[in-house]
Length: 280
Ligand code: SF4
Image (tube, rainbow, N blue to C red):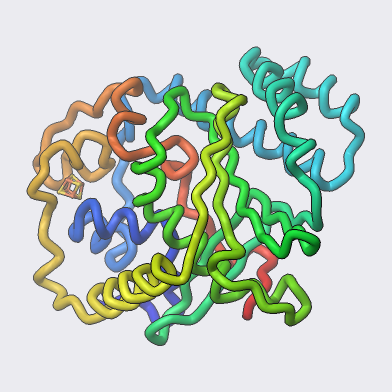
């Protein structure tokens, strides 16, 4: 059995492949559903994940022009008290950074090695005066990661690369080079820290080679060679633990963010067929 022709490569399925070939095989080729928890405290995990989703929705509504006081009332009435703090943090630190044309919750795609790479952005900001495009990504994790770690993340590499390839879809044909692109992570619990990751031609070419090789490797990998992870820590937060006989106990929630994961990425894989898309 092989990947379907229409398979889209995203940050989550690429991360799955890099974590464990077998997990990718189970999830995207066999499409095996397995009833297990990602973390031991499922209720807390779910609550945090949903609070993060509600915060993202508030920001999206704000960027769509819904009045601030209306959204502030909604944040204040949220059952999760942390949301009104995140919201206040957002209002205090972010709007002044958003000078330019805004594209919120937008999906872009590009073709590479006869496959489609897809990225869904929290916000793209085009500042024509400074000739710069900024990718904003809102995070609700409880831990602030190091810049070096973010720099190497699949999300960072994929989002900047896809944008570099497809930005003309948004800029009415105006050309933006990789050096005109930067990615900014903002953590709602650490509002004063904007982690800025600039892009350039050298990194762009490295990313192009990386994703091209990876996509070709995944598509041509013989069925029997999707091996299981050798690092057993990868299994702690994997739903296929019992399927693979790698234990039945899920990892704890606190360790989840220490382990190269964040709640946003752990959300269910997005069905990109259902998202309005700008394709270039
Ligand atoms: S439990 Fe471990 S070996 Fe099995 S799919 Fe998950 S990460 Fe891979």
